[in-house]
Length: 217
Image (cartoon, rainbow, N blue to C red; front, side, top):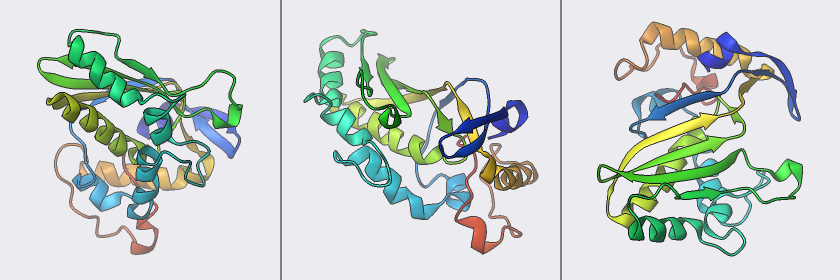
């Protein structure tokens, strides 16, 4: 969110005005729903909805596509099962890439997450996720389920999880959320988030807290 706020420019989206920033690449080493930052500031009510987007094979409203379906039955292929087979037969391979897009599909149904890459390195499974676009305000709701996908493949190979690399071509926030994002960033500076386990903010009003989220560390 700070990257978008500091480097973004006004742009448009189907849902309204946005602040759009240059592409970004980063790595996450560990992540789970019990992360202390997410426990303090995440929107607990949205967790089941976004988790179902990755687990259910059918489309869950209000989404226009299912990551679960595209990962496990895209054109009749269980892509996660295919990845396990590929890496089991060739642990050194760099060909463990899968696509979540379909040529010629409706433009409004093209998923934000476009591809995943899996590599076995030093006995652990590393994963790269490429997003064509990502709302930085709610990105963690996708990143934690993605870690679950990585763990599922790692379990199939009987190895542990390594880092999760994230590439976002168009990181953005919606203009309607910019005031809340600014408030979160001010709180994060005050609480030193990212340098240790945060304490709940005493002046974070209970009513709006369900709509707040901080950047995944």
